[in-house]
Amino acid sequence: MGIIKATNLEKHYPSPGKPLETFAAVNGISLNIESKEIFGLLGPNGAGKTTTLEMIEGLTSIDKGNVLINDIDVTQQPYAVKKIIGVQLQSNEYFDRLNLSDLLLLFASLYSTSIDPQALLAKVNLEGKIKARPDDLSGGQKQRFSIACALVNNPKILFLDEPTTGLDPQAKRNLWNLAKTLNKEGMTIVLTTHNMEEAEYLCDRIAIMDQGSIIAQDTPQQLVLDYAPKASKIPMQGNIEDVFLALTGHGLRD
Image (cartoon, rainbow, N blue to C red; front, side, top):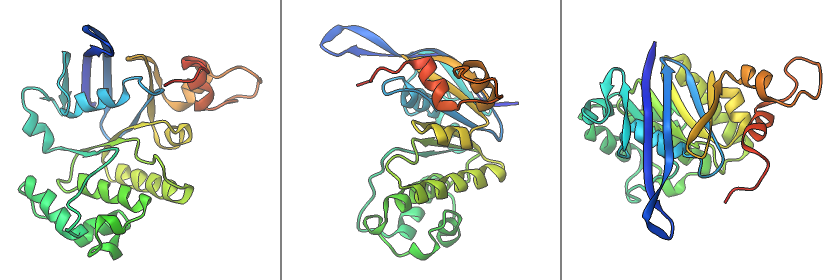
């Protein structure tokens, strides 16, 4: 059963250097994301992944189309939606004088909910950092803490926007394991990523975007079978990176 239903989403912005013209950052996208699955959005720079995610989350206005989350209209009932979703952004700015415990309590107060900061930090493998400040954390620890912030309201759905960008292999794998654990506990996860291995390892289904549109959508295994170059008769020869390049091309993107 779909927990997220996006229908014919469009978002337009003024064209650079041409203020009287617009371009479609997102052009007629429809998605049906199932409860308790990990769903990935892949695409080159400027494909519209983050804009699509922000429209679904209610963080960016929708020019055309609509989004239902758990049968709640994102535009008409934004506060009801925010109670059941958690959002981990690409970058976060925190009050640098507050420690992690105080920050979690602050975020929880925005939802009028009570939390146990120690338990929440333990959930993301930061149990020894309760009195640390954000500047004391490594890159991987900051990413895990941003996920802890997104979990303060115990959401049904967690949105991750390029969660492992800039992380070393150990920190990356630790975050993948965290996402898998949250999903096994029943949480639906929607993520954007540039990392092909990440998409293949984590996602039950993947939508590949280019120039504001979805150009392919299926399980990682089926995408490989359908689109990877047939260099061999061996089943499953190729990977999601082969699919991505076959669909979006080998040219560099700005």
